[in-house]
Length: 290
Image 1 (cartoon, rainbow, N blue to C red):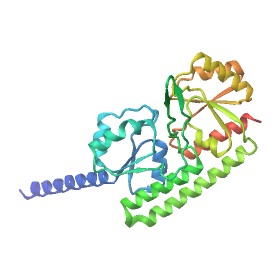
Image 2 (spheres, rainbow, N blue to C red):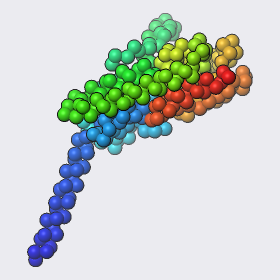
Image 3 (cartoon, rainbow, N blue to C red):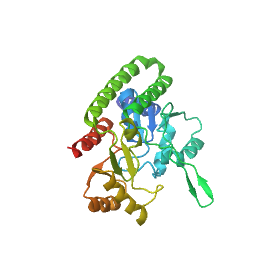
Image 4 (cartoon, rainbow, N blue to C red):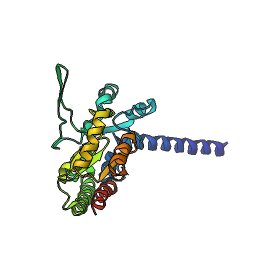
């Protein structure tokens, strides 16, 4: 009878260990809003935390609605790191906090010089411009985002501060290299313009003295008259590039391209590989002017 008892004790020990290991992993999970933010967080957190995105690859953080399983899993996270003002956060953050009142939330837009949209009159009333949420598409902002994440990790796990400091320094060095490469690619293009459907490159354009022209009209599909004015603007400003994003309708971009002879290029500002996407965007602009 001893052998079954011993086996039972071993199995019980394994189950207990596995359960404790799963609990430990749950306690070390950080949730972020989207993939570029996961890139920065993982770069600093290393293997100390598991980092998961609420908005999965291929979905738009402007309009995404989480599935019930995600909301349940969120209760296992030790913190939530937000980008700042993206549509998903505006729509869901209050509900997320209502269901997880003890969940600490860290805002990576803190300290960034934010771009505010222009207000406009509609009939007899005025609509204030909103804050442009696409802060991560900027090497200048990336340093601030990285610092905010570093401070978050240290507050969650102070004994490992030295580890996070080393990872943070490595990430800053990569951001510096990225900035140098982009600056070299875009040298001499200051004042140039590009067209994009959704204004995801506002901070990128500000960093390098470029003009971003959006096909969206107040966040909606453009009217025929607006589209005609876009075609005129494209010709007037000698635009060489129309950027297409996979999660948005490309038909209007194709209309402008066909009418003006301008080339379209697909980019993904939501790419997890932040450094690769930033440089690729700059290289497209550079090569279009050669």
